[in-house]
Image (cartoon, rainbow, N blue to C red):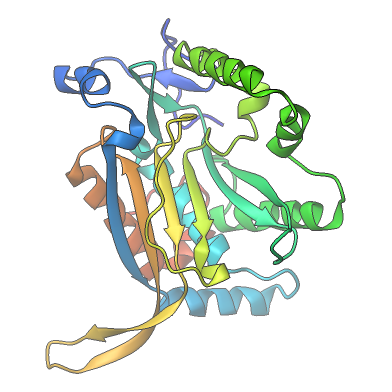
Length: 295
C-alpha cells in the first residue's frame, strides 16, 4: 500500500516515487557529501515504559496466547511514526531523492538462542488502510516466528544467498558491481529486494534481548535504507521531580542512526516528539492505522 499517491514521473522507480522540486542544496548534497555512511546522524532517546507495560498487560489479559511484547509495540510505533512523518521514508539513490511506495520495517529472527543458530530476515509491511498497527505487527510476527522456528528450510533472502555463496571471488565482485549499477539507475531486481532488509524503511535490531549493550549501528551503502534503530535492554532509570525527589521507572533506550541528508534536525526532533507521544499513550496504536495523532 503506497504511503501517498502521486502523478507519475519519468524518474520514478518500481519501489519509490521521485521527489522533484527540492532546493539546490538538497539537489547537490548527494554529489558533494559522499555516500550514506558518510552522512550518519546519530541520536539517542530514553523512553518511559510505564504506560506501555500497563497497556501490554491489559492486552495479554484480554487475549491470552501468543503474547504482545514491547518489541512488537516498538515495531508498530516505528511504522506508525514513519507513516505520519513521511520524510523518514525517503532515501537517496543514483543522486536523486525518493519516497518509498510502502512502509517496511525489517529485523532479524533467530531460530534458537545458540551460537550456531541461523538468522532469518523478517520484513513487516505496514498497511495504512488496515486496522490497528499493533495488531498488524502481532499477527505478522506470530506467523513469521512460527515459520522460522518450525521449518528446517531457510526463508527469505537467505535462500538467494545460499544459492551464490560458493561462487569464486571474481564472480562475486562482478555480481556486486552489476547489482550496484542496477541500483544506481533504479533497476535493482525486485525479487532480490523484496526480502532484503537493506531495502526497507527502517531496520530494528533488538540487542537488548541478547544482553548486548550498544547504542549505535552504522547505516549501509548497500540498498536504500536510511534509518537504523538499536533497541537496548530494559533498565530502571530515575525520573526527577522539581522538588528533588525521583521515581524509578522501567525504560528502554533507542539508538537512532539516520541519513541526515533526508531531513533537517527540526524534522527529526518533531519525529521523536511523536514517538514519545505514542509511548505515553500506547492505546493510540489500537486505532485504525491511518488515524492522525495530535502532539
